[in-house]
Amino acid sequence: MSLFRSAALVSALTLVSRITGLLRENLTAVLFGSNALTDAFFVAFRLPNLLRRLFAEGAFSQAFVPMLALARQHDDEAAYRRFISQTASLMFWFLPTEMARWMFPYILPISLVAFASGVLHAEGRFATPAFTPVLLNLSMIGAALLLHEQLDPPVFSLTVGVVIGAALQLSLQWWALESMGLRPRIAMSFEALRESWQAEATRTMLARMTPAILAVSAAQISLIFNTHIASTLGPGRVSWVSFADRLMEFPTALLGVALGTVLLPGLSKARAEQDDASYSRQLDWGLRLSVLLAMPSAIGLGLLAEPLTALLYHYGRFSDGDVVMTAKAAAAYALGLLGLIAVKVLAPGFYAHQDVRTPVKIALAMLVLTQALNTITVPRFEHAGLALSISLAALCNALLLLLGLLRRGLFTPQSGWLRFIVQVALANAAMTAWLMWSTEQSWLQWQALASAPLLRAMHLLWVLAAAVAIYFAVLRLAGLRWIQFMKRSGL
Image (cartoon, rainbow, N blue to C red):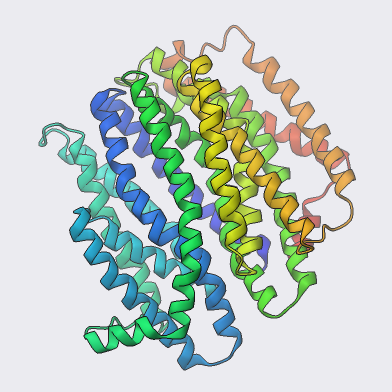
């Protein structure tokens, strides 16, 4: 399957996940509003997520997937399967220990989900990992609807949904591995566990995870700092930033996560085969597609922050003031959307070379930069300043990663970038003019349309549809064709 088709598949399934995630956030806003208890849930949910991202999704996949691709190139099926089982055994026995210590029953299943996703990605199976987050969202939605009146405080119903959702995700992905004949055998004896620990492949992977953990730690530590700062600004600030973060994650996941997911195995395979031309071609395609879609997404999120927030959250206990404050944070996030997405494309370029140290150094520098920027932005913009600092640091992060790849000669851009930038700039200018004109129309009072949500949705839909039509029409007039990207991705 080509990169274009793989990315489109992951993006489509991620869209389903993000839609259910938005429904979950919408239900949270309606049932629980933005208050101290909702803030407490968001803070509590970030704690197990911190461990999950440290030891599972982020650090683990960065070390595991490239090594899995290298192992596959050696054409030793027995060694390949043994590496999978040994890695699963180490994760299983380490994580129950941590789970008991931290008393977070969410960590074990969701971490094994990350392991299963790594195997499936290395095998070119992207659909199941992209779909499984839907189960978490549906579980949280169901628990909120069914249990919010039975628990005190009601927001505790969300925590029940989190644990059930993690178990459902693991069940689905474990079934997928079983159907492929790749379900790992968990070591159930001390001797087998010691063999897994002493195996050269697993020890190499664990050694490479160490700097990756530092890289993921930097982002999560920054998130903890920002959460603490937001909580000191007054009730509702953590929730406003969290709701805005959900809006920002929509395009980030649809494009950035999808590209990062399909590029890492492809880049790792190209590197294992020492095919530098294929490596550069894939990375160049990912960057172009990021610019092509991230720029209009950022403009749309920035100019339509208030109508999008009103449409998605302005119901029940979510007040007019909540709309305004959430929209401010969303607009600040929009400024760094290109950087946030580009990082997802550029970082795998280093991971494929089994170089985790360079992204680590940059991530740590961005941690310092983000907090330094907070001292300037928060006093002026309050909670929106936190989002602005993240955006500025993300742009710097992407720029430093790109310069690192170019300086070391790992990436050679393809020809035609100048013309491409001009084409995209013209299309964005035309779309921006339309959005600015449409949002200034006095009859489009987004908050006043709360009593007519269907009418509000229809108004926003035609504004967005017209913006998309204008953008791609100008691209076509400027000479850019989608078929170019399909060809670049190997279609």
